[in-house]
Image (cartoon, rainbow over all chains, first blue to last red; front, side, top):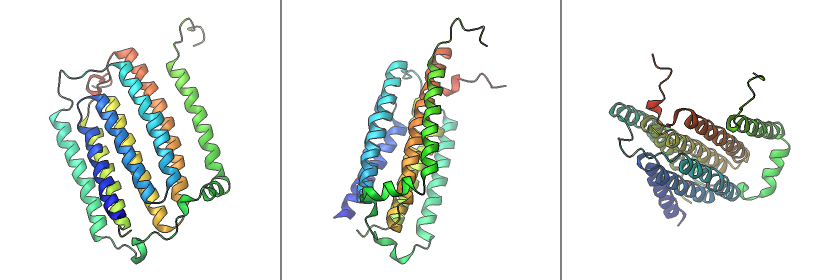
Length: 171
Length: 101
């Protein structure tokens, strides 16, 4: 039964990802991105990472896609009068897509996978305590760096979006 | 579950390739940004798959950091796009050619 779910969610995710790339309307592309993220979250639950599935939906669907929709509606970019891409870009993107995909196919078909790689050993991703232990012992420094990164990003956004008028003497 | 790790890795690579093709294909900066997000999510899927099939937690913890970086990146990137739109009145990348020639 999980196999059926895997194929279902994988097909859903890939179809929605193609919708992001090929959709002419920007709002529809954002909605396709949202659906694709829900598919990835469903795949996370198949891999016993329930907390990450919830976080992905909260952070991406709740914050990132909402921000995208705000910006799309703020900028009101209706590019419907011309084609969304150039022929040269089409050739380049199809070539890049085919190269990456053939590399992945070679990896999957010719690679030597370990024999026990077909079964999940222990559902460690479902235990909340194991996240906390690693985050506050082994990865304590990266956590602090991430906090600092968020602070810098916040300051950068404020500087970028504020209009500095009447402050020429500062420069 | 009889699905092996290779299926997850292939799916992750396929999502990454779709995002990569979208970055090369599209002209709208916002759609390019969405395709970048798609590539980040594909990498998190590979992290979670490896972590789950190995029975360790390190990959799962790394997804936290990727989510944080993605959130910060989206905030700064969209602020840059808004500032660009204020200055140039466009977000199409082929019209933003001030550095060409």
